[in-house]
Image 1: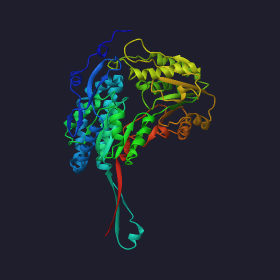
Image 2 (image 1 turned 90 degrees about the vertical axis):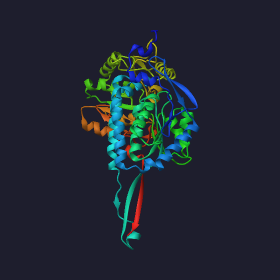
Image 3 (image 1 turned 30 degrees about the vertical axis):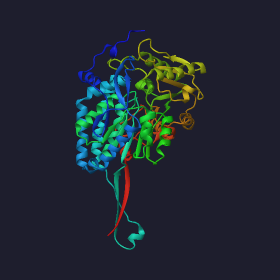
Image 4 (image 1 turned 45 degrees about the vertical axis):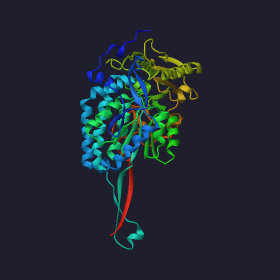
Length: 501
């Protein structure tokens, strides 16, 4: 095995080096405070420690919720919409100026390639500006008053949109900065205050964001950050009676536990959970477009993304040609440290997750699937798994049914072009997060899209997410939507007011 070196020998920016050398505490009530524990975060591309950070549990969550409530009832709740808009725009400008730091922290902490981390940073700046601009458009309606009052006198009935209150936000490790902002930006725009729990495996970009929030001049307690384990800080946040809403991104199993924990005060819950997204390749598909597109549907972000298209249904007339192209693409992908500009795929997040993914690969081999690409770890430091493709997969195989969260594609050959039959194959899953259809016939595409039970389906592309486009799932892929207007609505209540005149 190759000797391990820090960052695989790549240089990092001075500001990133300085950040790693800091003491990383909890942000509660506008101050960085000591935690009750400490953990290390690792570079998954090398296995070497990046830095240590302090953690908290129930006691720290209690303090953070109290600080958030105080800010909600006080300075933040009284702030004008113009001032709230301005402070969000100021945060966006600070993040633009520190884009290198944010980009490199997600590369080091998560392992993602630079091209993804850079795109993520620019996208989150756009997202903050988008929701800052939406603040002035939060508006109610004037509607007809109730008949029994209108029959007696003139009356006025209207609605107000008001913030939910204190929001708890639990952020995953696969795209830490992006997921933090897609929760925080609409919540802050709505007028909520926040307690954020980053993943214990990737806390760094969220901690850097916390300092930027302080620098932007947010009032004390508007945003609080409590690092810690899910079973400690996450559980305390989910069940806390002072939290009005929980937003969670992660596994379906954990999402179900959060629902149970939230029942004490019937807090509102948004969940973006697992997926096993179908990719439907029709006989007339443009293979020059489909081969790289379908490949990246599976292998983007090392397959560690909830909308990954990992169940590939391809018509028998083009099956062999498509498989040959996909295998060629997979074998050509460069694996390496995210700081390497040529890297297309990084490592799995941890030893444990790498072992889990390899378990699925070995299981698929044992079940009779045919391995046509990848299927092995790289013999080097870090948790790198080659992009892996199986053919001859059947619906009963674990590689076909279960979310793997790794670079593993399961291909099924189909003989039918009947749209109802194809939809039945696509919908044979408890999930319903994403999907795509590849065909030159847009009539066929739109008719098939209508039949697929997923919250986000693309035509001749995959995972076409955007700040203004709602994203969320059917079934066990979650509750509610993030991004766009629906992402803002998730943090707003509607109050109806009627006045006798």
